[in-house]
Length: 597
Image 1 (tube, rainbow, N blue to C red):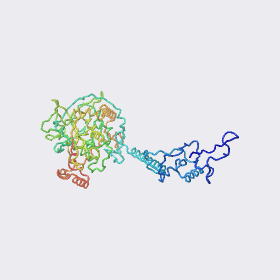
Image 2 (image 1 turned 30 degrees about the vertical axis):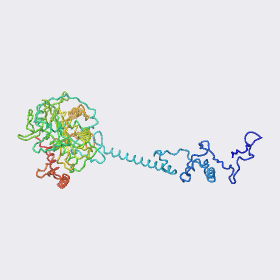
Image 3 (image 1 turned 180 degrees about the vertical axis):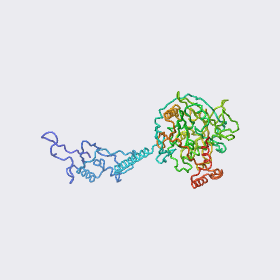
């Protein structure tokens, strides 16, 4: 059986086929219209791409409804396997009803190449619209959160370089109540301190050295978290925090006209590291004749060691909380004093100097400390004398070297995010970096004091609570030594900038008239203010005395559960109201604010 191509018509009147062929190519089917039987016809525009003539590779499982619907939308008119009555009729119906559709390509899904095979054909467009709608809503929500974040951050800006302490941080208070009769003379922002620089002769001139020093116990260099030492209490040793004008040696040097500016290392370090401070502090300035005295008030904030001052995590605002800023400052001062005495040999062997301790009574047991009265020349007419402290001495290769002793304290790993007991041995650098972030001002002041005293080494102890809820009992986890100059470079503490700040403040104060002034760090902004105050200001300040020892809350016993005991103690202190911080913390506060001469 051959293939009949039919009769080719002849046009005797011209080129091309005749208007009406004499014989049709194929016979017509009844009721099939004008088209030839079994020949598919579909109109195409020039912009459309033609498909295949016949789909011989289609899915033979045409009984599947999903396959049937998929094939119906693609090259259906060329599928000769279709039933002619359904396929050709559907093609004719589609051809008769023309509608305008979007010529843009459908959006490409972002779910990977397998996405189109896992979804039904009629869902992708709707699914893409839902995804786009969700993305738009997410963008709006993200923009709203960013606006709120920047709004809270700009309204709560405080701290070094304008850094905030978080949205929930308590409002910081001024260290001294500003009285209405005080006159503000000057306001100096910290931004002006960053470019100051001044070089002083190094080393300075030693005028006098007083006190006695004990030797450092090198066995503490081998202390680690697995071989910790319990922190002892030194109740019988007295610590002195005497201000400048109450120092009999400074009075004698001032009478002999040895200098024009007088201060202590604690006051100078507060000025030198002022741009790193967040909490408010104050210094009393007295101009007497051509001399200038920098003093601190009794019970001043400078006597206490701040904790987490530069941290972004706010501390509890309640003063009676054991983790509040005030309670931690008292605890840190107490720890620092006891640590500085425990790491000594205490065998009776001491190094004595020109004069004994100028603040101790005869026969009184005092802490190991030496006071170096040193003089720096600021210019031709101005020289500065400061009392600097060193805490211990060590004998290295036949040469004696001075050192300062300070202790960092861990109160709750949840606040810092670093557990010292786990990280000190393996990640000591991470622990120090965290402390430099949270206590930048305190560590910088310790370094400045070591540089002022020309200490050969500064020892940093890592002291932690036995239990996070027990603020009476502590353990020494590690002791690390640093050279002050190398450590200053590591923490980006510039000696020339430190002296530039002091020189600028001295120059401002030297232009003032005779009288009394107070320099106050603003509690909310990175700046200091200078006020003129009456001559009798701060002389009759009431300082609350600590409770007698028999009335203080005693620390828990070793074998008792510290958590339960501490909760009971906290409740008792809250009910007692207004008393001392309790136990050894109260004794630490008493030591920190010892009676001045």
